[in-house]
Image (cartoon, rainbow, N blue to C red; front, side):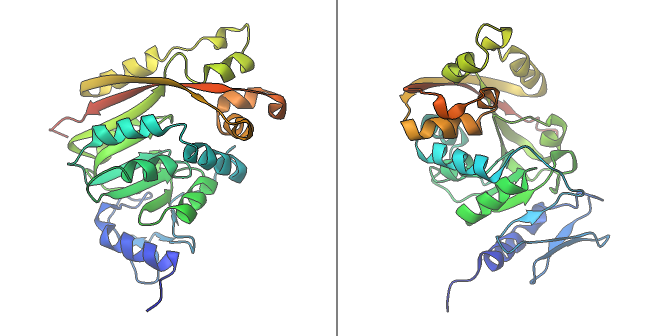
Length: 283
């Protein structure tokens, strides 16, 4: 028997895990049919696309994130630039986690590379408002669930995830707390003061934005969770010439530079805080 299509594989995998889904419109339970319809008790329906993802958006949304941006992001991830961060996150997740949601997952590289370092099998789900990002994720990474969706109306049941990843992306703590299992963890990655400092200096030279502090973001996180730990991971890494325009395209810092093709950077600084918070056991 030949290999099944991505759509059929995704249908089968989502059927195995349909208990975690709730309708983003009415919040009732959802079921997945053999022909790829994801429907709820109130007959709201979404379809699994041929690429193997499902679009749970309740209305169209245009974002500034292009197909080209996500292609550049994947190349940067594959270059190893974020390997130390991904290794640190995988170590934090450890051996006793079986469901992971990556919020703002983009084209899926962080989630895939983190899961590849875990010893156990996990159900890994990525969600992003950008359809372009999710299409790329579904194209490149199988045996995961990829969703276009908005965390303000997310397609997940309460208490579904052991770990929620929030890597360099906006947070929705009310929703995190709703879908996190009691005692589950949120792992949030935020920039530290020297993150991509070489790019920041080019983008915001001699302005107040040349300096960055994550103090308010960290404070808000600590207000949400108990037993918060904060680990700083910082290093400088050589940057190949062909990767410079790709890095500048994928980061919002680079969007403030007019002619990215003329920029030369020999190395780049990664400087990030990994925040880990535990959900209350009384959720």
